[in-house]
Length: 217
Image 1 (cartoon, rainbow, N blue to C red):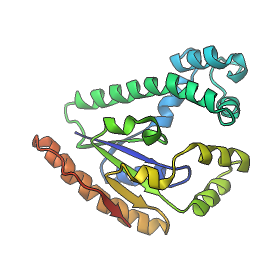
Image 2 (cartoon, rainbow, N blue to C red):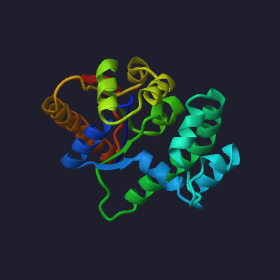
Image 3 (cartoon, helix red, strand yellow):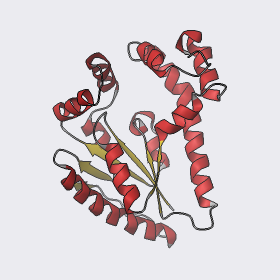
């Protein structure tokens, strides 16, 4: 089973690409869903966040109010580092458990993809066989995010906290530039799927993966 990390900046189109890969045959997990599980009432992430920042970041049911939490960490670099240091290990443990569960299935998938925003920032990209980075012009990403309902102030804070496309692409195996139409992104997804399928075949045969960096238009 090939383990693939898929990342990109806010509104880069990584979720769209993840969906296209799922249609082509990949098994896909969104790391943000894992965070949501951790932030539910009584879950370990909610307990961690309460210990770090108090009840002000909790909803009435005891789960994490992600808006309130973002209001703190996006304006306080120290608070952001504290949150990442406490929560990301828990997310990584859940990802590892997901991969292990897939391996134990009677017929494990050839390609398993985890979509996550901060794979490079946290260094967890090194735990994957392949890293796919989705890039796009900042102005286009801003337009997409604002159209999707992001508040400009929060968007600016999130974009400032993330690495640049160039920094993410520097450690990628495959880079998908999402600066045109959905049809062209679909074409890039098909080309990427062929590459990932080749990689998965090598893994299944016990062969090392080829060292390469490929940019997909």
